[in-house]
Amino acid sequence: MEGGCRVAVIIPARLESRRLPRKLLLPLGGRPVLACTHARAAAATGICGVWVATDSDEIEQAARAFGAQVLRTGVHSSGSDRVGAALECLQPTPDAVINLQGDEALLDPAAISRVAAALGDSDEAVVTCGAPLPSEEAWRAREVVKVVLRGDDRALYFSRAPIPGAARAADDAGWQSRWVLQHVGIYGYPVRLLRRFLRLPATPLERIESLEQLRMLEAGIPLRVIRLAHATVAIDTSADLRRARAAVGDAGAQDRETEGRADRE
Image (tube, rainbow, N blue to C red):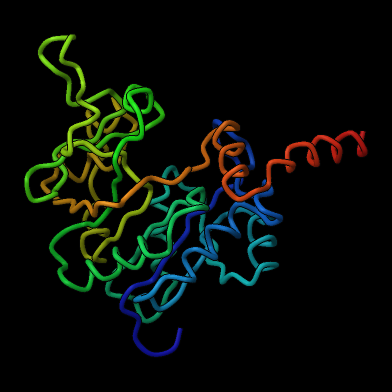
């Protein structure tokens, strides 16, 4: 990396995933999911480069095939840990880093640009994004992470539960409040805050919800939430992948995968 770098984008990428194995290598619109995510990041403004961070030979091979820069890391328990390890490979060290989840293949590059711009405005907070919940069903779904905001759009709490809840069941329309959003899988870290965060031990709330961003809130690290007009499909399950394929006009990909497996058997 030549010269200085203000904001770098690092996509942490592991081969296996609990709900949808090998999802980053599955086809979406004629190329791997990871390639789609990388292309979105590369189209953003205000960044100095995009890197894929992985411990997988297969991920590295696929990433280099579509032209990505790759940083090899060890095995890590979270994407933020992997980003932190990859960051130490970049010289000179950037001022800030955007951790973009590899399954955010349909995220608007403008959202990434807005995170980069916010990091340029201030180094006092971690920056993330949220969008209005599309339905009560999404609000109640445990796989959809919700973030409740205070008046200045700083995060108060993240949860898999349907929050905020009304005192009376008959009034339970919390998902329509402008103060709760669906969380979007992107974080912008001033490097000093990322390093501080990674030194902290996991917290009880983090373990209960399985959400590492709660560790930041419990430690007093502020999270600024950028409001997006709508959430895109983060590919976490086979149903998500079908929705993403439909969104890009690639609904026949599942049939082609099935035919390919049959040919190999």
